[in-house]
Image (cartoon, rainbow, N blue to C red; front, side, top):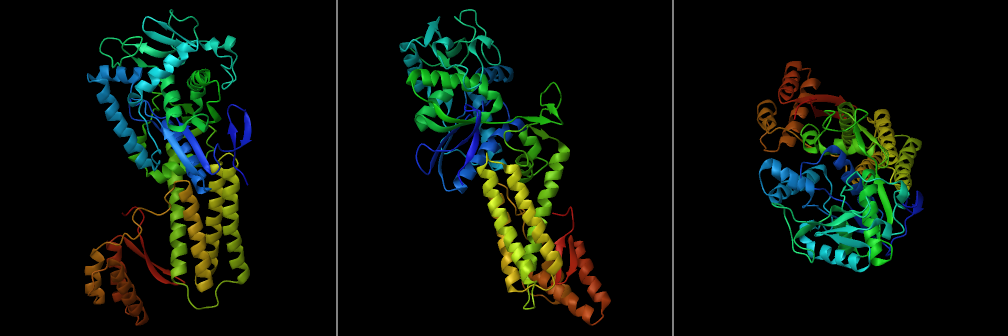
Length: 499
């Protein structure tokens, strides 16, 4: 199968045909670093992280570029509020962004250019636009003449005559047309500035992405991505200025992710539901946040709520428990009769089905919701298998359970979800001392100490020495461990809520 996705420019699903066979060139708009990112920003970055991961999962070599806008009106305004230099604000929140992305499991871009490091190339692009008659200069400011580019509005599907200024389109009486936008802004007192043929100044927001994407990827590159609220004016303006300069295509495909709302309302500070990613990650692990977001298609609006995040965390816990059950059953398989061959074949078929569905769903516009649902179906099939045959498994059963667990972990990993708990063993060192007292254990391994305690308990039960057996059980309980008697033998699990 081939990968198909919804192209904003084409307004339909298209088949992906890369510029170079086996390679993907991809640009995604990065943050303007004036504050900590909120969970809506995080959703966009996570969505394109997953798309990138899936291309790599399918064997593509991905050149992934994401910029950092470190000079902008918002940065300058935040600097004035904090009484510091704009560069200090940009540095502070760039570091915070990179840390948040690492925490969320979003892989770093192949290249991450910063606007302030690309100023000479931006000046040159403005010169090229002026030379081509697509821009004009007024008192040190340079504007792009929108009506000089005949294709303006094609990306967003808007007619030029119907458009109005606003939404990050600056209103300025000196412009020839209200839709014209700034390529270069003349310096104001106290603002960062760089030299140019039109005087000291700084680049406009739209110019930055055009220059950095062309510099790092060449034109046309395969995919330009971002949130749907960037289609107009940002991406429309990027495309216009780049294609006006080159006379050719800027990006072959445009992908846009849906926005996030909180409890069915638009997220905003005025509504009191504005949530920073760092605050969410302070209460829930990244894997749960990722799982919540992946259960909604990347182009659809995502309704975030504390209850839904709790549900995702609980679901993740059930998946992890299932993996532990599979591992336990496989490790304690005996040389007995094993499960019926038909049941083993059915689980093998469920493994193959999970792989096939994952590929089919992700090939169809990166449908993570369907892909995750397919993984959960395999988890349920494995749970039923262990429940039905856990006390009579043989080596063949151990092999199919190991394959099921590896499939669940591998497919979730392809989406960036860590299926294993951070502390897989979690056996307290105090178990060593307890085993020395109750089981005569003389080693230094907590796992071996627990095994010795379970063996001592089993021997005591055989001898009907209930007080000795209870002492082992109570001692382990004091360490936060519960003894479970299973068809394959006793084991210990952590008491819920104990870490």
